[in-house]
Length: 80
Image (cartoon, rainbow, N blue to C red; front, side, top):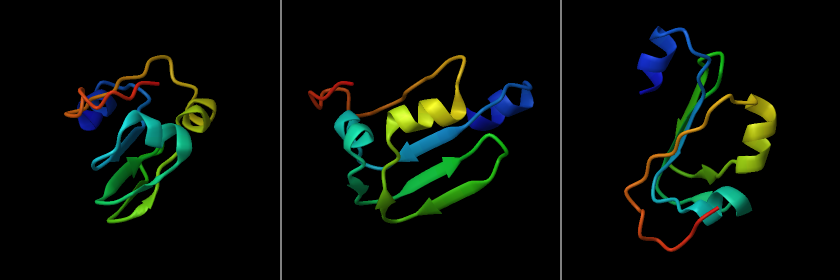
């Protein structure tokens, strides 16, 4: 999805974390099984373990016109 949005000329940043639930994006709990980030300039960062970015801090930094979330854990019971 990131590549398609960039190819369409849209300013895009991607932040993904394996096994995360919404609460972790509020608390910054470390991800136990991997993450991938790509900022607006296209710089990537990835690894097996690392601190979750705080969602409100990302919003303040990126200032998106739109935000999207994809998850396989829709039944986790945790919502922002």
